[in-house]
Structure formats: C-alpha cells, structure tokens
Length: 618
Image (cartoon, rainbow, N blue to C red; front, side, top):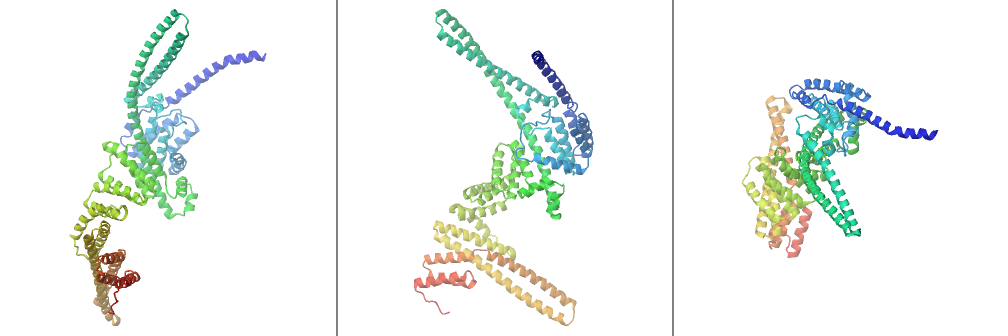
C-alpha cells in the first residue's frame, strides 16, 4: 500500500515544482511591475528646478516615492513611508543605522542581493535628487538618508550582470542607446559560446573518426571514414570562420560595454564624492559639539554614535577618506579625487598613504579627459607636497626630484624664488649635489643683495637671508674646494652678521633713550596730575613696549642663526691659509660675543700652543 503512494508522489513532484515556479514568476513579474510607472524622463523633469526651487522638488518627489512604497505592503516599506514624512530625529536615527554599511572598506561589493530588482535606476535617481535638494535646504541628515537609499537601489560598479540585466533595461530611458547595445552584447555572447561549443564538438568528433580510420581493417571502410573526416573538417573550418567573426563582433561590443561601464562608474564615483562632502560637514558639526560637550556624555547620546565610535577607535574621522578611496577606485582616470585624498592624508599625518594618493593623482592626470585635468597651480602643490613627504621619510633623491618638478611648474615668481632656496639647501645639506645647489643659489644671492631694504623689520629679515645663503654657499664651495669663492662667502656672511649686531645694538640704545625720557616724563606726575605730561608718558611707555618687542624678535632671529659654527668654520679655513693671527682674532671675537665662548677659548689656546704664540697681556 505504501509503495504505490510513493510512486504517485514521485509522479506529482515535477508538477508541483512547475506550479511553484509559475507562482514565483508571477510574484516576480508583479514586483517588477511596481517599478515601471516611474519613468526616468519624468523624474529628470521633476528635478529640473533643483537649483531654483529645492522645496518644490522635495514635495513632488516625496509624493512619487510615497506612491512607490505604497505598492509594497511589507513592514519595512511602511517604515520608509513614515520616514519620508518624518522629523529630524528619525533621520538622525536612520543615519546611525546606515553609516555602518556605507563606510566599510569593501564598499565596492557585488550587486545588491537583498532586492529582486538588482538595479532600479529610476528609484535610485529619485533618492539622489532628493538628497541634493535636502543639501540645498541645509538638512544634512535627510540628505544622508536618501544617499544611503540611492546605494540600495544602485550597484556602485557596473558588471556584465548589471549591464545585461533585463529588469534594469526595462527601467532605463527608452531613448537610451544602451538598451540596444546591451541586447546585442548578450546575443553575440550567447552565439559565440554556442559556436565555441559546436567547434569543440566537431574537433572531438573528427578525433574519434581519425582514431576509427587507423583501426579500420578494410580499405573501403578507411575510404568512407576519410570522406567523412574531410566533410567534417570543412564544417569545422566554416565554424572557425563563424567563431572568428563573432569574436570580432564581441570585441566591438566589449569596447561599447567598457564605455558604458566607465560612464556608469564615474556617476557612482560622483555620488560617493558628494557623500564624502556631506560626511565632512557632519564630522565638522561633531567636532564643534565636542568643544562644548563632554566626550563621554556625547557618546552616551544617540547623536551619531557610529562616527564617534569611529573617532575613538582611530583618533580621527575616517569615513570621509574611505568614501574618497572607494570613489577613486571607481573612477581611476579622475585626478581630482586622489588629489583631495592626498590632502586629507597629509593633514592627518599619514605620510605613506598621502604619497600613494598624490602619485596616483599624477598618473590619473596623464589619462584624464580635458575637463577633469588639474590646473598648473594644483600640480605645483602636489609636487611640493611630495617633495616634503619624501623628505619626512628620509628619501632625499625622490624629494629633490619632486622639488625640481615643482620648480618647473611654479605659478608665481615669489613661489619660484622660495622653492629655489629650499631646493638648494636640500642639495647642499642632504643630497650632495653641490653644483646644482650653487647654480640655484648664486642668482638668488644676486637678487637678494640688490634689494637693500630700509625698513627695520624688513632689513633684519633681509640680513638673516643673506647670512643663511652665504653660509650654504660656503658649505658648497668648501666641498668643491674653491678656496677663493669660499673666502668671499665667509666674508659676506660675517658682514651680514656684523650689520645685524649693529641694528640690535642701535635698538638697545633707542630703548635706553626712550626709557630715560619716559622716566623724566613720569617725574611731574608724582607731584600733581597734569594731562599733557600724562599723555606724553603714556606715548613713551607704548613706544618703549613696542621697541622691546622688536628687540626680542631681532634676538630670536639672531639666536636661531648658526653664527658660532660659521666663526669656527672660517677660523679653520684661515688656519689652512696660514693666517693664524686673523684666525686668533676671529676666535677672540667669538668669545667676546658669547658664541660658545668655552669652545672658542679652547680652540684659541690650541692654536697658540701649536704655533708657539704667547697670549698678549692686553
């Protein structure tokens, strides 16, 4: 009794599967039909007033989205309909939920698996336009929610599965040539696969016929097999020609697919960049709140818990950089994105990542279309930044290379002059390319000497520059063993130092005179209050304080200069020239000026002992 029932169930099982598949197809068709009334052309028309009337755009598109979500009775869609009409707190809560999914490293995953419609460009476009409208209305959390929903209905990267998906093609604009090209791509791909299968089957069949021919005993059978082999080889040659023609067509279709893929991924990259700007805005608001609120209190609230957690784990906000990283991977020919990423990493002191981002920018600049290329000023900033970053990693050759490239792209004469000094200093002190350092510094020194400013503050800075340039040239000439030029640069540096000391001494005398006059103006005030004398006293007091500040700035500038090393270096040079008296005088002067006096005294005593010179009693 049991066995017949089992056999009956086995006969009914394929029928049940067929019925279930029909029901599933009907449900799927109904689900797809929900998306069709929302034409892309109509949505684009609703979004035309985005810049002029963002509130009107929000009202119109919210009605359309509510109509779309009403077609699905599930609990999740009911929540989404409520959220469309919700207040700020609901959007903040939804943002906290979505941010975990949005800013992970593997953002460029496969097609979304949680939707029957893998790609719904019309619904994604509605959410995207709404996000942009809310940004113009200064509602960042509303915009953040709609950006998150945009990515739910849109895969970031176009694959062949996305390109040929029939549901997505139904929802595209009917005037789009992508529909025809996608259908031809799929048909050609299927025909090519079929041609390759037929070709392989024919080859296997020919191999079996040739094997049978070798085993055949009679000549008549061998002749029949040879004729059959010949006919099949002709069919194989025809199939090969057909396959080659299909492969050629497939290459053309693949180039069109590559074009559409690049356009699609560039749009996705632009969305991620917009999201990054929004995230940075929210991060800035969090930073401002952190200045007011206690960090623990802020974390206990539901206000952006994920961003705060991200900050507490990484000691900085990483969502902005993660989004730009994903956008850069999508649009590798756009130099604007890695340029921004390099600036972000350089600001957060992530030197290696900043170097990688800037070098990726330079590579993308070579392949970028004209409208995306960086300006000359931005290229200059990149080269200078790379020179500085490589200097921080102690890679001096690379640093010098990028500084040289920056010199070629300097936008102004002032930036060029400043860069020449920095590059010459790098060559002389670090790379050992003394000739290049001299070549850069000599014209710089000539222009510097021609300035001769009269203003006290400007002249002090000018003397500092003169001293540093002369000292660098002296270091270079010492290495190249050019004694005459070395002596000239020593004298130039000493002259700059002596003039600087004169200005400092003059400032001290001026201060003393001002202080004396201030005390004299103060005496009448001790007996009785007279307005004129009091005003004179206050004027002199203010003048004295100003002169004190100027003197302190001069002393800081003077003390930061390597003056003592120059004196000792010059004394060593004079000893080599057998001018011992001048060397001793220079060391005595250094001791008198307080420039490492103990060292100057020891060097002078060593010179006297070596050359048997008695110290003068004076």
